[in-house]
Length: 30
Image 1 (cartoon, rainbow, N blue to C red):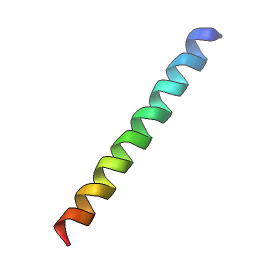
Image 2 (image 1 turned 90 degrees about the vertical axis):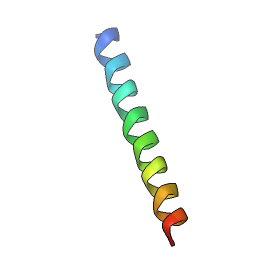
Image 3 (image 1 turned 180 degrees about the vertical axis):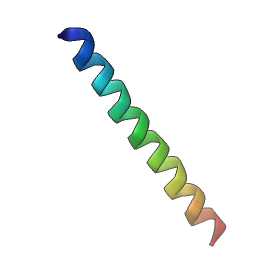
Image 4 (image 1 turned 120 degrees about the horizontal axis):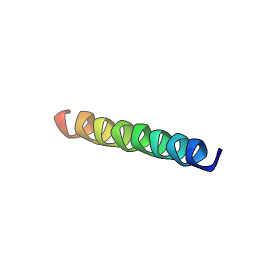
């Protein structure tokens, strides 16, 4: 159970990080 929660948090953080990077990259292209 703990491992599943940890993996879920890692996935959420990874997606947020990817989104932020993509968002900033988009802004830089304008």
